[in-house]
Length: 182
Image (cartoon, rainbow, N blue to C red; front, side):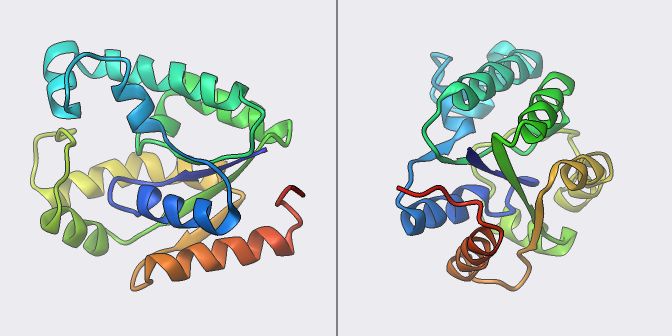
């Protein structure tokens, strides 16, 4: 079983995922890093400029398949858009049904996400070419129902320290007897 972290950009998937992986003594996988490694360009923005969104999304599906095929329990941060790709969504539904993944939706408010993105925009292309708040609202309108439908657990991250969120998730995993014995 893999522990998957889903949510929008800036919800803390990578930073919380790293902390959680250390706490659980498990490998951490950032799916965006796996996708980016499939291209020669050194930034995600450049990959999108050269190859387009469709190539990136196909890379996400491919990387997701490879990660889920590995039997080693890992903490995996999915790209914000990964669950919204039809093929990837079905892969996640099938993996959940087969009890091969436990999915945590890191939910954050528009305001919290906007503050984080303004402070640290990172190496991500704009999805709709609008200001940060308008983009977040648009993306969440489409993706939040998908995140919620795929989630085994929803963890609100507003006003929470990343270490605290990792501890909350770990406690819930132990309470639900999700963690493997090793």
